[in-house]
Image (cartoon, rainbow, N blue to C red; front, side, top):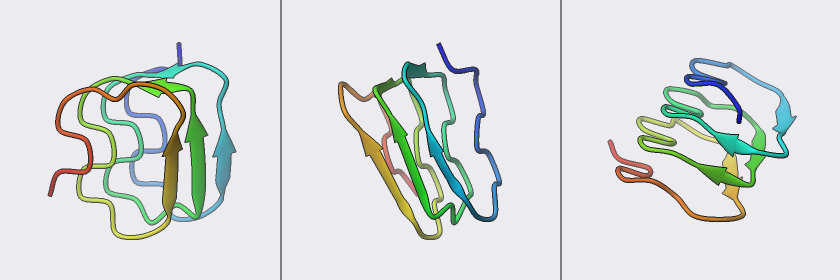
Length: 65
């Protein structure tokens, strides 16, 4: 399990996780690239750029503005 709010507000870089991302993964961020196996609720809210790949299921509010 990757903790809650990981990559919240990150301004650049790449991250590759082998696990389930907690809530608010990659929120308010222009991160270049991030990959996670699954993610919980509110992933990629208010994202301003970059690419996030979720290989499994996503929680509610994925990519919401």
